[in-house]
Image (tube, rainbow, N blue to C red; front, side, top):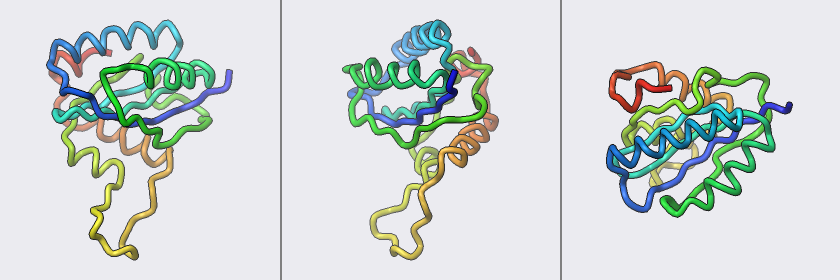
Length: 151
């Protein structure tokens, strides 16, 4: 098996209510477990998703390119990075979840405002750097909501 990671972001058409988000997490966790996929999902109140998928290369790519992209509940899907990895970073979770805020995503992704002078623009994050930041983000804060507590 060739272990593979894919990290993408997207925007929901309409922000999810708690019940809709719970249903998404429940079905995704069951599906991921069946496919041998692990990973994590961040979701912001304004409807942004950031997700890491990891597992067999074919399973991960099929899930993203044939199922996630076809999901009509979101748009503007963009792969941030993908590639082979030596080990799973989220092996304990079929789909870990953490609520985030828009500034959290900007910080994690290294967002630079359009009016920033070019010399001060940081280089894009590599996949390992982004995964490390996501692991750190997941480990911080309160994970006591009913959505976050489940694996």
